[in-house]
Image (cartoon, rainbow over all chains, first blue to last red; front, side, top):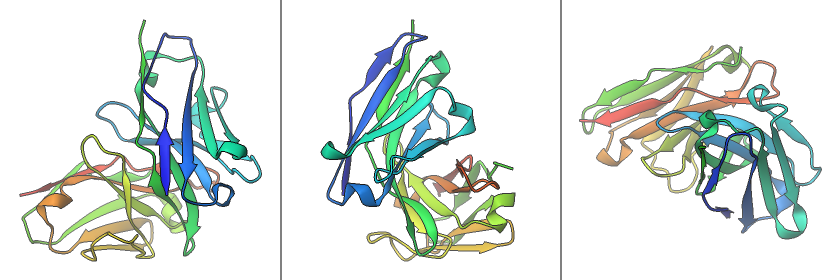
Length: 120
Length: 108
């Protein structure tokens, strides 16, 4: 199982960023893809998820209206787009595979992270 | 409530046992999982509160829960266990996921 994310981004305030997560080594449609971010020196923050099979999504309240998570099943890739960027969106963004194991939903594989810098 | 509360920092002597806790209302309803993160690396899953470890995670890591608190116990801590540890579960609505603030473990 591998999740490979796109490279670092530098954006201006007010712009949008779209990060990709290419999955391999398993059946893409069988597990959710979640997005988690981590600001410098801070903790992990869950942003939302997509079910690659149905396309259904769910977003954390902190990001609703600004984040859009999509997938393209033909190339086993998920995307996270964050709009109206602010300086406090500067963070490392991770994708993580999600699924239920023995009744517990876990994030069992993670991408390498994509640094996003928002600066004028 | 959407909060999971962890102690910011915990220390343990090499070879001793340490317990890291995570408290939150949603933990009375939903299971949790624990993630280890070392500097400059992505988090990795270490265990769930049903005590399931992925392959490659040493059996010195164990998970448990009681009421509104879940625990990660490391029995015989090693130098390589020094890391940040995060708990994760659903919030009380069940619709979202939330991480605890993280616990920095120092192995002395």
